[in-house]
Image 1: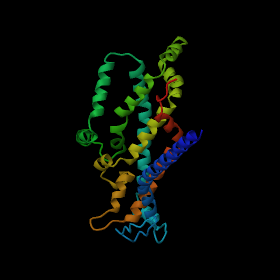
Image 2 (image 1 turned 90 degrees about the vertical axis):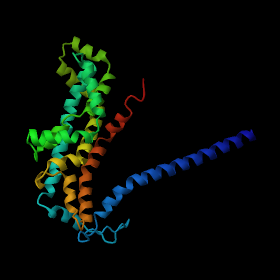
Image 3 (image 1 turned 45 degrees about the vertical axis):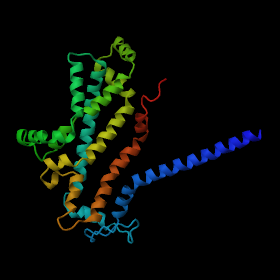
Image 4 (image 1 turned 135 degrees about the horizontal axis):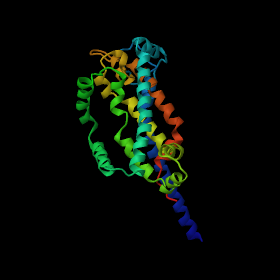
Length: 287
């Protein structure tokens, strides 16, 4: 009995050590992950007159909202940059959810000529690096279609992405075909099946798709920077570069703009957090 208690005590001791080590590792990872966000937010409360004066202090000496006022008064289009990003990200997100859902359902549950060939082409397109497509896209938008510096130029290349179609297809493949067949027997058309059956069963994956698409489009910099010449058409990520000049940088106002631009992402993520976490574990448990 004494030997058992001694052995049991050693196990508890080892378990505590393991928990402490895991907690320390997780705390370190969380600290490294959250530090840039903390530094961005805390730096935005610095004085805007300190051009290029990043103090690199973890706690500022003086807290002021002047940098936020400076951000909105810096340009007549400061508020429009946020609206442009919101409009572009919302349109792209909605279009991806609609078209990727329809295309994914077609690839997963319908049989049509060339189905496998088209899906193979889709997979090949996913393997092409994003940077490689920018030159032909730029030529198409600017030289052929001549829609540079417009909202159409900002949203057209990403109205539907291969990744979202692939994501929807993989999820719809796991849906029981018997449900769809039963709906057909009851007289449901394909649009009614998608709207009344498939979409309600797919809220989790559609929420994940919406979150990832919105965040990706909101944070994109390179493409809006290429196709937008006028300041009025710039998105917030491109607009922030206007605070940096050849010989100085308005550091605190730039951080204020970055903090403001991060708020919609936090709101979207935490409002749909439940669906996002469910989407991560979709297919992890079979029952």
